[in-house]
Structure formats: structure tokens, C-alpha cells
Image (cartoon, rainbow, N blue to C red; front, side, top):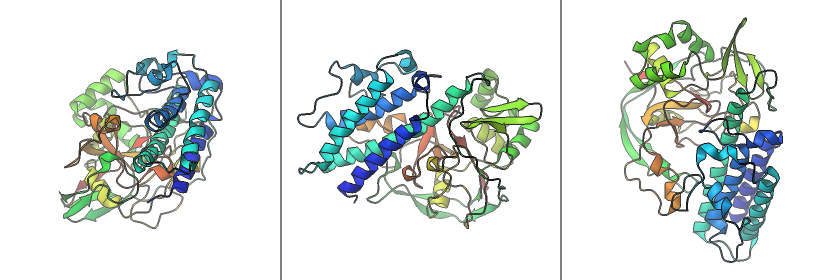
Length: 420
């Protein structure tokens, strides 16, 4: 079990990293909402403070809220109906108040009181510490959302005015040769068990019969996806699920999000600026529909989350994460020494599994039971984390989830197929 000092250090490290991500921004970058799925950076900063204030501080004796008017309770409540009403999500970018500086003061207020709680001679109750742990990992999710939402916002700015977020550029590498790794049929244990942190939707641990299958040793690359496009991908309805084909036509998709056609070929917008497409890096910003269509074109399929977890469970948690500062998938400079490459980091990998409850799952009581369980409808599971994900946030059992048409997240995929 984590010690009180380690929880305090995790809290401080997480809060500092959030503000480090926001530090390069102009004030104007904080306040704009680019689409209903995104939120302004200012809102992310405030909401993560609201979480600690609402679920930890406000239920402790003697705490006085930063905002006495009650406005913050509504403005920065995301979707917790048991806590109270919420300001409409699509309108978060319409409010110039509270100001960015006021939001930073709000964060300082919450930090001061929460650290006083952690340093008090009277130790917090274990359930309070458990909520603080959830709050830390909740803020890490919003660190990733700050980057994805900011990238989408920047993509709407004309090229001549578009800013470049500070990002490193890796040395050139090359993609590992694709290999197919065999897995025998077996009854496998899936899900989280143990004292380490995990979200409720990763439990309970359970057994599942997984038939024999093969999994690709690495994600699909941009060059491979380009070959799919050149073979008429977005003009061939036979490759697409019905809803996927309807989305292609309605949205006018011709390439992954952030690909731009130039006289010299395809270019890609990254947070660090626009650059030429690198064929050997993992393809990113593709929807479930696009990943599924590619797999059908390639004579393969997407893996189930049970297949993905079977392959990833014993691998080291290393990869290209947010802390590395590339903020874009990178080529493999060298093989990892394992059968699989880039299982963690670089891109979230779509699976073929709908986001549903594990056998025996029950949401936690109270408002925090709304965190994951109520979204188990109409979404697909992604695994492995991305180059926008903090490394300490991810694990082999982690279940991310999005609707099948979403592309603004750092999403890619690897292939699977039935064993012959």
C-alpha cells in the first residue's frame, strides 16, 4: 500500500505537470473551445481542482470553498448528476469569467488545503486517501485531454498564424518488420487485481476462454495506411461497416485527421508544427471505423481487448509517453528486445471489443459511481496509452473508451487474425 508521503508526492508531481503543460500557452489559448467534444484548457485546470474540492475538501470539517457564490460548483462539474447541475458542455468556451489568473488562484487554494490535510497529525481516513488517488489519476486523464484538445484547436488556425507547441523531434529510425505472434487457446485471467491503483472498470479480475489467435508485433504505420488510401480506401463501401461508410460520406473523410495534402506529398500537423509524413511511424488520429476498414482490406481484424491484454500483461511499461516530450508517435530507433513493439505509448490502440462491464462489476456507491459505469454503451475499448499519456497513468489492464467515429484523440491500431 502507498504511504502518505508517496501520495503527497504523486499529488504534487501531478499538479505541477498539469501546469507545466499549460505554461507555454498564450492567455487566448486557454479560453477557446474548438468543438463540443473538446474543452478549453482553462476549464480542464479548473475542473481538476473542482474534483479535489468537491470529493475531498468540501466533505471535511471546517473547509471554506474558494467560490462562495456557488458558480464554480456548476461551471466545473463535468457530468456528476448526483453532485448537482452542470453548465452545458458545448458552451464551456463562451465564458470569459472566471479569468485564467482566477483559475490559477483556485488551484492554489485547493492545493494549500489538501496538502494541509495530508500533513495533518490526524491522518485522513482510508476512503479519503482512496478518493485522492482517484483524483490524481483523474487529473492525468485531463493532462492528456489538454494536449488533444489544444491540438484540435490549433488545427483550426490558418497555417500562417498557427503556433507550434514545444516538442522534441526524435532521431530518424525505422519501423520493425511486421511479424505475427501466435497465442495458443487458453483460459486467461483478465482485469486488475492487487493493491496498486486501478479504475473500477478494470475489475473484477475474471477468467475467459481465449481462442487461438495471432497478434501483429507492432502497430500499423502511416506508410501502410497510405497504401490503403491509394487503393481507394475512402471510395470502397465494401470495406466499411454501415455506420462507418455513412460517416465517411457525411464527414467527407479522405485521410486520417491532421493529414494535409501538399505538392510534394502528404504532410502531418503535429503539436510541434507541420512536417512531412514519416512512413514508418505508427498511424494516428484514425477512428474505429477506419481501423476496422483497414483491417478488412488487409485480410485481418482488430484484436479483442482480451487478446490485447493477454499479449501485454507481462511486458515492461516502457514507451513513448508524454514525459518524453515528442508528443507524436515515433519510429522505432531499435527493437525493444521483446516480441512486441510499442504496446505502450505512441498511440491508443483500438480493439474490437465494445466497452461493457466485466462479469460481476458493480459501480461504486455515490457520485463517483458515475465515473465509468454509466458510459458502458455505444463505445469501443482502446488499450496501451499514447504519446500524450503520462507514463505512471498506464498499465496493461487500463481500459480507455470512445465512440467509434472519434478521431481527435491519439488513436491508432494493430492487427490480429485467427490462427491457421
